[in-house]
Image (cartoon, rainbow, N blue to C red; front, top):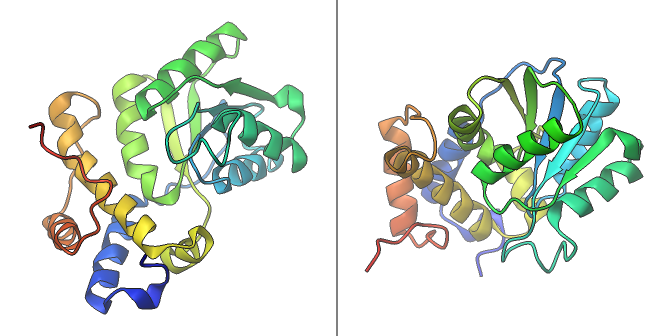
Length: 224
C-alpha cells in the first residue's frame, strides 16, 4: 500500500498536485439560501458546513447521502445521518439541519436535496455547496446540469494536498480519487450527467500518466 507522500515519485506527486489545483474553484464565500453538504467518507465536509452555518452563511444545512462501499463501515447509519450528528456536536441546532438519506450519487444529492427543501417549504435562490476539495469542479458541473436555476458557490475545507493525504492516511487512495474525478469531468458530459468543463491538456496528460502509473482504482473501465 502506498501510504505517505514519500511513497510516490516526485513526478507522480507533481501530477497529483496539478489535478488537485485544477479541481479547486476558489469561489468567494458569501451568504446563500442554504448550505448543502455532500455525503462521502470525509467528515471534514460536515465540519466545514457547520463552520459556515455558525458564520451565518446560511440559515439551513442539508446533508445528503446514503452509503457507498467506501462509507458503509465508517458511517453505518448513512452519511447524512452521521454528518448531521457531527454538525450538532459542533454547535449547529438540530432544527437547522435537514437530512436527505437516500442519495447514492451526486446527481441524486441535488435532486433529492431539492425535493426535501421543497417539502419543508424552504425557498432556494442560491446554494453554498460543500464538498471534498477535489470534488468542487465536478459537483458544480453536476448541479448546473440538475438544478440550473440556482446560483451556486462552492466551498471546501482550506487544506493542502499534503494535509489531506496525511488526514486520509493513504496517498494512493487520494491520488486514485483525483484521477477518477478528472476522468469523470471528461466522460460524464458525453453521457449527459454534467455540463462541460474546460479541461486543460496538461490536466489530461497528468491523468494519463498517473493512471498508467497504477493510480487507477477509481478509473471507469470500458464495458466488455
